[in-house]
Length: 484
Image (cartoon, rainbow, N blue to C red; front, side):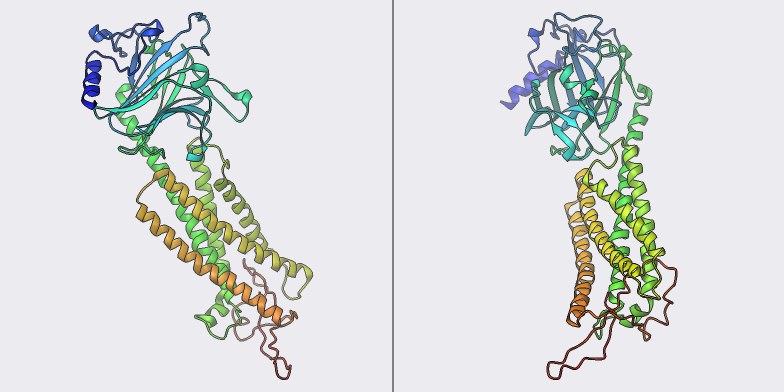
């Protein structure tokens, strides 16, 4: 059966026809028994309403198309919503294929047909964003003669669709929807395919591009974004641009990981451990003496790295012509950026600690709770960001597994210190009756830094008296600690 299909395909190819469907009923002869007259290229005068036309989209991808005019077609109707187009994509290899119509050459806002051999016949999708979850199938949109096959080391996708279905570009409202295809005016096609041997729909990397046709009927007027002599350099440029975007997202992730995987949790841990009511733990004296320097310095680094990560994300999104803050991850990133800005400004403008005013007490509670909230949100961003990067660029499962494990260990350690230490202090406070005093820990803190030092991050000098109640005589212990 396979040898018979291969022989049939070979005979068709020798006759010059790429078609896998029967188009003889369309009123336009597609017979390719006339030698070189069957498959037309840009070297001769073309009429793509009477014949298949062809162009190379990339070194490995060829597009062939045929325009079908309705019987009552008005020659002055350039948009021709009821016209139909048969498209064939021929890729030298085995992978998924996609082609669509774009309003501006970008991905977002386009309608595309995607096929995966052999699991899934071609279907129409709307691209509402660049993440896989934003690739939405158009239900009820039926493609004619839709198929995708792997024959003679080539993946061949074919379908036929009406202009007002396949050629629709869209925006945020129905009023923005319009037919993006034109018979004799410019039409922008976008295309993409997966890596060789991969049929799972994922990020295409550099295997993408767009082709602008000035005229679909007479492709002598068709033009690549760069002319044919520069096609090789254009492909290299596209690969370099895509690679640089990937690297830019990697740098974004590195800065975010350092900010919220190291700097922020260490800064918060220093504030928690500075007065932990435990007799001995590693570096207790050192932390008690220098915690505020570490807290302020690391929080400052955290804010600086957050600004860099946020700026890279905004710039990368603009370069990819995607919408800003249209998904949970970028929305959460914007929220974190705003909240951490308030946290930093609040740290520098904190009320004086000379007297425990109501304002100072309120500031301490808010600063402490906001810091912990930002830690939780930061960890969430790290996990979701790593997942998005993995979905877009794939890569070694082992490498991603190691990253998840390392991140999990760090989160577990810091969460234990931050939440465990805070809860233990609250337990001591409740056990001691919650009596509040302004106690200066002269042994550890007074020699380190004055109370009014203008440094960021003086979180929660909430001073509570720890009282150990004796079960035998009810006497209170003289041991006092500051509890955050």
